[in-house]
Length: 210
Image (cartoon, rainbow, N blue to C red; front, side, top):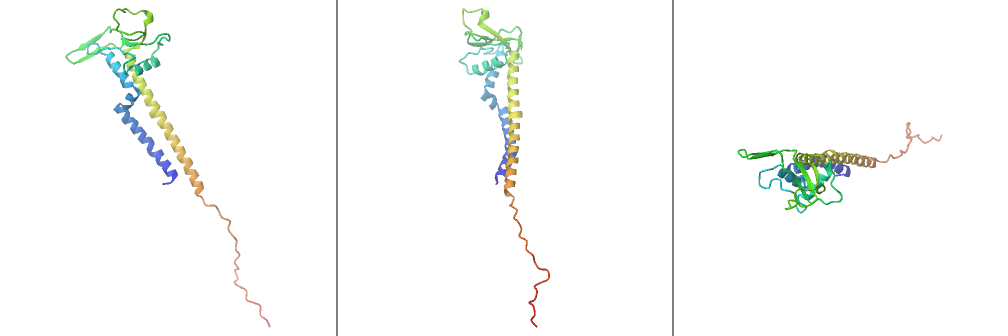
């Protein structure tokens, strides 16, 4: 297989395979796991609970979901975290409205329930209430879920619409250039023809001697 055919094959086959792999990886949750978004989703699910075991459990720097969650908060929260203090806890405030449907085994917590980043460990007995400089309200549990969805959408656009599109264009241009170079090199050099004059009247007989 010549070089231009190889590139043409790659340009034709690789982009669809890459899109297929991305779709499978996205639906299987591999991408969310690689990016740590699945851990943030666990936090959001936990903050949306008010009655179940482990409901609204805070997040601490030693937890595996800490880095992904605090990174998402820093990126999307309108309230900037304090530069002179180190975040030590991510928690949600007590919900003013929640329901527990025991018969249906479902519960609901108001999406407007605030999420705070505290600059000290909590719960910490004897240290309640907080002072104003000990926490920052960064959003709500509804905001956290929106940030997760936005992060997924942004990554999907970057990979599926931008990177794969650019790769397809570059491979197509590469295939075209290689095909053109091979075609030019394959053209035979034009040889200069040699003109030969052939008599049309045949060969003249030798002169007769009288």
